[in-house]
Structure formats: C-alpha cells, structure tokens
Image (cartoon, rainbow, N blue to C red; front, side, top):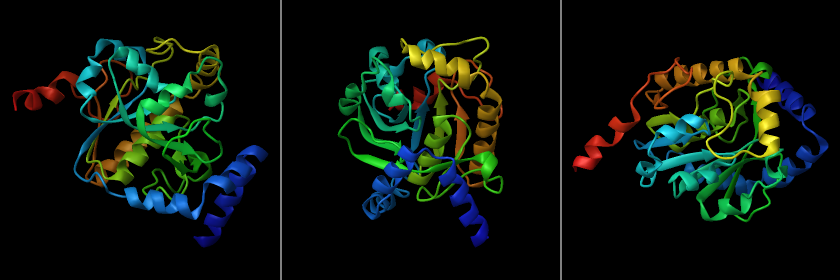
Length: 258
C-alpha cells in the first residue's frame, strides 16, 4: 500500500506543469496543514449548499441562501448580481481561471469568507486561503472519495467534486447541490455572463467530460450515503439523477415558520 501511494504521488507530480510544482512547494506547507486541521468537523451536523453556475439557477430565489453555509466555485462571486450576497467558502481548481480576461476576481475578496484553492496555482488576491492537492480518479481507482483534506482529493473533471469532499471534511451532514445540471448538450452557458475563455472551456472540456462528472457525483453520493451524510440534488432541472432530488423551496419552509 505504501509503495502504491508513492507511485501515485510520483504520477501526480509528473502530470503537473513546472509552474504547478513550484507553487505546490510554496503552498503545501506545515502552516497550511495546521489551518486545514483546524477546520476538520468544525461544522458537524449542519447543512450547506454547493452552487454551480448552470442557467437553471435563474429559476431559484438565491436570497434564501444568505443565512446559509454556501460553497461557490470559479466565478461564483458573480451570483451577487442574482441576490446571493455572500458565500462561506469558495473553491477554485482550474489553473486557467485567474487568467481569464474580465474575470473580476477582485470581487471575491468581499464575497467569500474562505477560499480553497488548488495548490498548483497562486490566487491574485489576498484572502484566507486553504490549499489542497488532487489526483484524477483514473490514476487512483482504489479511492473514489477522499475523506482527508491533507491528501490529494479525487478529481472527476469538475471543481464541484472538490467542494463536496471539502464539505464532508468540514463535517456538514446535509449537502445540497444547486446549479449542477451537467446537461451541456441542451443547456449551455452560465447563469452569469461568461468570459470568452469560459465559453471555450465549456465547449472543449465540460461537454466532453460530462459523463465523467456524472460518474463523480454518483461515486460521491455512494460514499457519503455509507458515511451517514446526505448528498441531495436541489436543482430544478438537469440530468444528475444518481442522487435523491428535493425541491429547493421546501428546504426553507420550516425555517420561515419559526
């Protein structure tokens, strides 16, 4: 098992660019380890929402989330235009994200409390940042879900899967997906005006990798069910049917009556 782990680490290192290797050495420090450990199970028993960027979010009242624990990803800070005033955690894993023209990442500083960032890149913003590494599931078929944030998370071609694994590590008991539709063939684009680079990435990457992303949601759901954690789909549309669907509006009825 130890030899297998060393082989995986070697493969993961070989698949990185020279720039990523440099950043990993700078970011995966003892200080980062202590910061990660301080968050373990900190939110035990609570619920959270992991929000993607599918256009179906236009069908939902996002202001209902302003008193919830929320994970946003990529350019999710643009959801402020749709009524989401704040996110608790923001996750970024694509090394190209910060390079987009008109990305407006400076808005993230006043939008999210904490940022979880792939260690192979350096955010161009000053925030409370927690770094993680990852490995694609094809290279580590013995592990479908990583429950230890200090080890490489399992990648399924979407940042959403990293957010789910982070949410589990933090102790959340109910994890709701929103705007994670993965029906790119029928419903392209984002809820916000995308950059030209985002459009290109969706055409060249997301559409081609949709089945891998769907498989990843399924594997995450299977692991979490065994761990006594609920992974639920609260999106009003889409093709993610491997986990239980719930109606978004019903999630707030009891709280509104209190």
